[in-house]
Length: 187
Image 1 (spheres, rainbow, N blue to C red):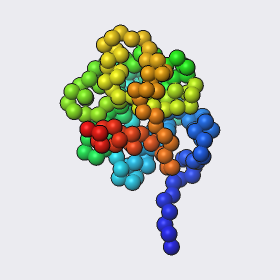
Image 2: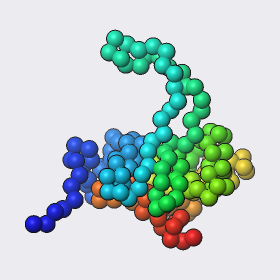
Image 3: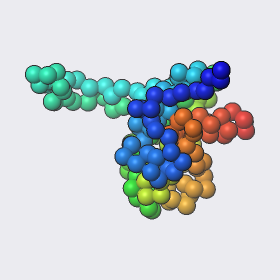
């Protein structure tokens, strides 16, 4: 009897066309599904970093109705892959022009700077919704754009400097394959 890998169909239903496969799914949801697969198969251990909030009011059904942020968050995801520390941001844009630097805060750039300084891996996963493309953009590219006071990283630059992330068979955003290729195999 052959035991084929399975995936909970209610979580993710794979199709061959990215334009329709993930329609309606936001980037973080796709990354979370990928992370669940990576964790359950001991490939990597990566989690969404919780936002530090203070709850002020709840409804009768314990739904948060009012809260305040206690401190600025750093990057969206943190974890470990193949003995290396990962910390990255997930961003979506509908712009056809490129990625607006206003979409990333200065404290996030500073977090990337520190992570890279300490030999960690830091990057952004950018979903260019207008083109149905998802790219991994190294943190140093974002830091350089910030340091040069650029207002935008043009789409053409993202295409040339970033790495297109392909959809995996069980992972809607198979970014670990790109991390392995650019940070572990080419160093």
